[in-house]
Amino acid sequence: MKRFAINIMTLFTVLSLMGQNQSVTSKNITMKAVTFKSGDLNLAGHLYFPKNFNEQNQYPAIIVGGSLTSVKEQMSGIYAQELASKGFITLAFDYAHYGESEGIPRQYEDPAQKLNDLKAAITFLEHQNFVANVGALGVCTSGGNVAYLAADDQRLKAFATVAAWLPNEATLPLLYSGEENLATLRKKGEEAKNTYASSGQNEIIPAYSNTDKNASHFGPMEYYMDNSRGGGVKEWKNEFAVMSWPTWLDFEPMEKAEKIATPALVVHSDGSALPNNAKEFYDNLKGEKELAWLEGNHFDFYDQEEKVDEAVAEVTKFFNKHLN
Image 1 (cartoon, rainbow, N blue to C red):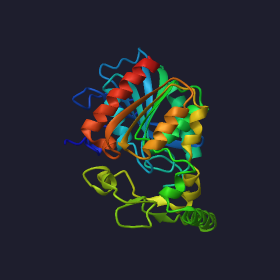
Image 2: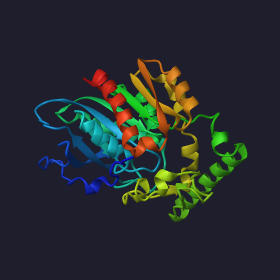
Image 3: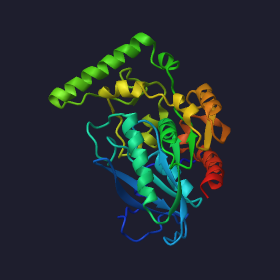
Image 4: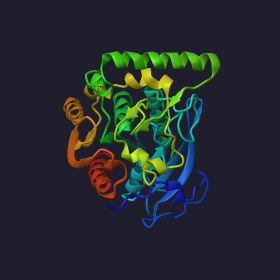
């Protein structure tokens, strides 16, 4: 099966926001490197434009986010490129603490900060004269992050998730070897936070590993271990700040569903993370909603052409309905 190219920076000429559009793929989409503010922090993004883009017209826009620790050159960039080829303005960006965006400590996972970053992305897009309505697409962890956004920001007109990571309090003990280990991880996180506050030392562990049980995610992690896939993206770091444990374990997008009236699409599969949670999340949504249950492995939805194409087809139909 053919894979999408992963290191998008090898495919695109990076342009300043004020520069001239340049055709960069066979689909004639274009990309500009942009920065925008999230509070006091500068966030780095890639803004994609569809074929025959005309700045005098208005287009539906989609914010795209990816998995835990991911950067804009990974799955968010892939989906942003594909959706731009379908006629949307798309924005893939690095959350604070990751990639080219500002924020210290580095590799720190903070759902509250990510919510602020997503709100800032809406503000950035709304200030572009060529943007009409704004939606959001979250792949894996960002599926939960955009659920936080939909529950909190009425400017968002619609959102979709693909292979979303949707944990809740009931699943955490199953995911992290019981309540005792959860307490240990939280304690390690608080200790690391205190160490950082006193010395500036940021304790880091691998984010993903097939062999290191100290990693935040241990198990078959083929996407991240494969240098021809996510593991080969030079902008990405396989690092997780230990002080992230409390905020990461408090991440509970499932509880947001009953607070969401924004139109929603859930794209998932039995082979994706926590499929029963995805169904429950969908059932609890209060607004107009659609469920697309596909086949495929969780990681395949990150970058495998067949699975990405299937997901993009569902997402395109949904956003054409709700953003135009």
